[in-house]
Image 1 (spheres, rainbow, N blue to C red):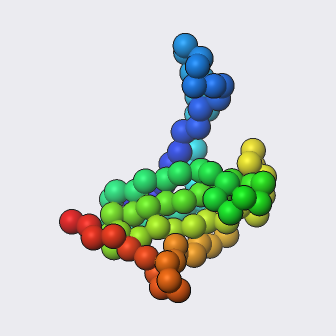
Image 2: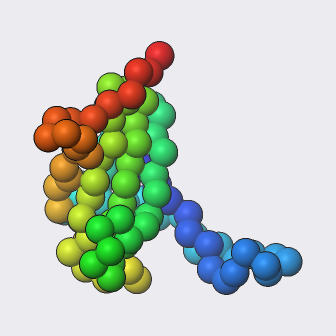
Length: 96
């Protein structure tokens, strides 16, 4: 499954939110894919470096991918991912 996102413009208090057109998110030149058909993406400044990263929780294996943003928030660039770790090990939650 490839990952596509829709982003909202405006504020939560707006009575009618405006959305960008959906777009396919890429890792380098290839679409981002996940191991199973369920993914939970979040675009947030995870590491507080001033740029938003893409976090993708996936049903397969119950793991979380971290795609570091090498671009800007308006024009993100993702090149590879690392798994979320806890205690020096790849973290996972039971799934299925």
